[in-house]
Image (cartoon, rainbow, N blue to C red; front, top):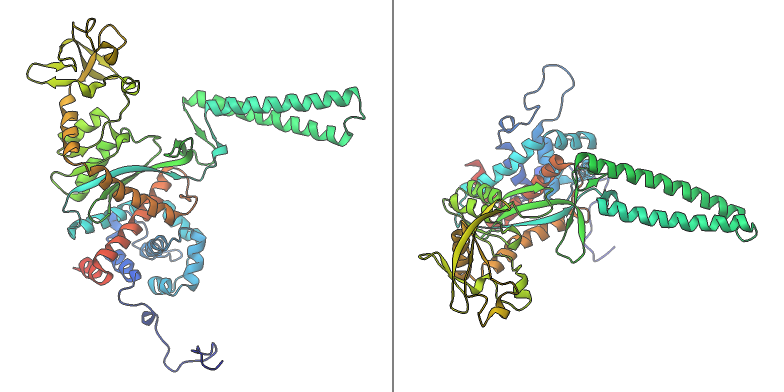
Length: 478
């Protein structure tokens, strides 16, 4: 093969063998993984086996298996069987583990048995980012995204799904019975082999109906809205695509708007984001150690008491209010057309009339004040206002907090775009790394562990891109 760059002969023995360290450059991310794990106090984080037993078979040190997992998630290798193969052929992993080759069962058991400790390792890297002053701006974007679990949609049931499926099965049985009746009347119309197959199908369908009845009884007994057969913690959740749903988990994340680092995350099986704002905002404030952070979220997080809790904690929430007014949809005035006068505790309507407070009521756990004007019946704008005799205006007792949030949004028109290009990009990256079926483990505790490894790998790659591997290694050793 003349005129080509030629490789070395496979059987050639070199006089001075090359060491593994020669194959790993100084700025290779695998060196970051090595130094990061070596600097951790694994015993205080909750890892077992840091101190070896005096008797019995020697085990792998937890640092070896932790390095193996972090490297795997950095390179989209989440499977324990794939990690086993990579440890036998991957030069970087040979360097990282000292040519140790644990089997897949040992690798999988390490993740299963050290879930809480692995989640603490993820938090340790966030603390490192805080020491490196990467969260100084104090602006985070919060959002949730639906990640697929190890549970097919056909293995997830609700009462409505069960009823629909039972009707379909009963329709099939009636159709098969009609064929059998035809065979009984005239055996020449239906072959005996086909009649036998129809009886087998009817028996299988009856067995399916009995199984569905047992699932429905389970829903009633445990007062559950859903049941998943493969992963009991997975839930069917609507996505942004119209009419689409995912059986899996709701991953919450608070992302720094400057460096796009995940400050804090949580995995839940709540089907909506409502009720998640305050907990995520407080966790982000604690992780970033910022005295007065600004939190950006979308309309799905708008809930009065959640926003009130953020304000009381010193967190400036910026959450747009959902536009759910039926009157506005029909062309009538909505609440935004009525101006509130705090000094007089009255509302000024579009016709210039005054709506005064009439009484106070508690609805859905909220104390609401009701206002209306006596001039409503004879108002010339009544058709544009309400079909009822009086236009009643409800005001929550802490409505002033929501007005402050709206004033912030009015003063920052780019807040929504900033949130979108910050957190939604992060979710897209994570889903691309995780593949078509996002999670490989089952039940909520194990899924949380898997997500922590994904977040740790994402943050580590981001910081390496921001600071460089060499600078990050020096900072970890300092």
